[in-house]
Length: 357
Image 1 (tube, rainbow, N blue to C red):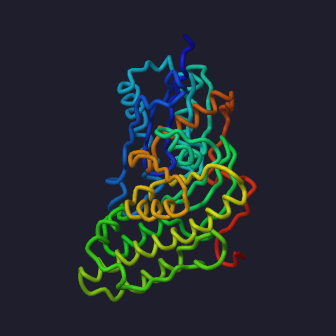
Image 2: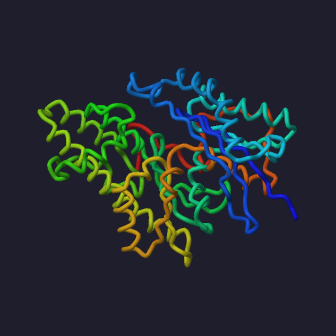
Image 3: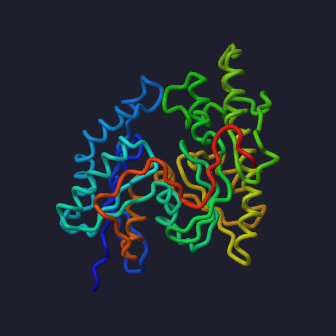
């Protein structure tokens, strides 16, 4: 019987140190043998956000320990690994370099293939770890650093349909939480506070909601939150603002996703309608609910990765590595970190003031 490949995945693009081992069963379906994630919340909490130098130092301190834990949990001997897949970008360069150098060192010492992985491709393919999904499918990638609609047409084949022209939706959640006095990382707590508030109390802006196709903008919304928080007088106002913010995000994503559906269908005639939502913000239950509602209305199949695979993790990196391994797509050991790395290399850069939509 042919041995199934075993891939060691390493992720260190921001403030999670993660290592995982992924293989596949007889049917060719992926199996997560271990998936260890070490958070740095306590390291950055007092600063109200991620400090790159502290994050990198924490990666250096933990990566060897996390790797040993992942190997122990999987029951796999390091010598039986077939390839090492490591996040090479996008992300914080000082953090990327830690995982990248660690992965290269293992690959060199074992004389095994090294595979550089785009962190965003990990998110894009993460639902394949627990669902059978054929290409093409429409992807909404929503996280702390990214917000974009992509037509996923195969491994390494992406067509961007829309993106944020300023802030990512996850950043808007985190900044709003900070303005409301919620301890870092506060983004996920917005949904909790929103349950106690009136979602119609504050009429918040929805930038470029009626123009720009399925491109998005959140900077104006963030500015409005800043202005309102200066006049908040009690806890009830805080709950109401959290609820209003949550509702506004839901409405923006609902409207823009509806436009993305049309653009996706124009590109892919007579295909099965599949809509994947991935990234850290995909864990927001209310966002899931409204996007599932839209999918039901438009006859799309809604697909979400499990909550454990929404945030940064190494299982998704190892899975991309597995798919690349099967196609003999390997990289040299002098591969450099890429802090900026688009999935759609041909997409026009849309960022900042003066962008024409």
